[in-house]
Length: 237
Ligand SMILES: Nc1ncnc2c1ncn2[C@@H]1O[C@H](COP(=O)(O)OP(=O)(O)OP(=O)(O)O)[C@@H](O)[C@H]1O
Ligand SMILES: [Mg+2]
Image (cartoon, rainbow, N blue to C red; front, side):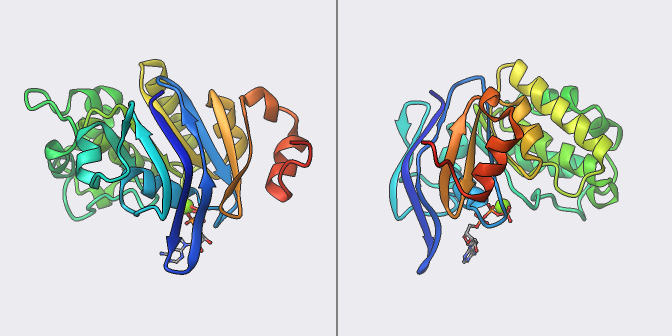
């Protein structure tokens, strides 16, 4: 098991962020985490990465309790978060953005960019361009490329398709599937719930800060199951 959370609760002051979220992510799989706006998906991702301190609950990463570790320590152990806003420095070039990632995670000092450039050749082509001059899709490739420099064991992707044209979303989903097939473990938060579930090995649906449904993709093949989870949770479980 690469990641396991147990009844994770996070508050923003007196506002509830997530409540009792327990999820399991097997090594080498994609786990989709979907749900309506404000459900708590980003809060969950930030808490796993160590950016938000849980009120209660446990986070086990690769067999170790990491709940008390700083974000940097978690990154060194192999977690990489690509946040909702992508975290790219648009005034810097593509190359500079990648170079900044060199000190993160488990990056290989000898060949830090091999994996990112092999996965997204466009980053090599646009190496000297300001990141802000890239299209939305290319910026997302850069954001994931930066995460790959850290050679993560676990990639946390928060809404990677946000703002992208449909044809680019296709490319992105193909790239995410490729990453998994090459051995990466991925938590994928998505607005395109159905598509995310389709490429996942297991999915969780969140609503009102809680997980309200979970299962393998086949469980959600019937449109009504997903709609029901979004609307009211599962009455039959
Ligand atoms: N900085 C914050 N301060 C106070 N409350 C917050 C903050 N960030 C999030 N929340 C609240 O926590 C809950 C979960 O928000 P979160 O951003 O995790 O949802 P989400 O599922 O990622 O939504 P979206 O699909 O819009 O990205 C919401 O009720 C939200 O209003
Ligand atoms: Mg969010």
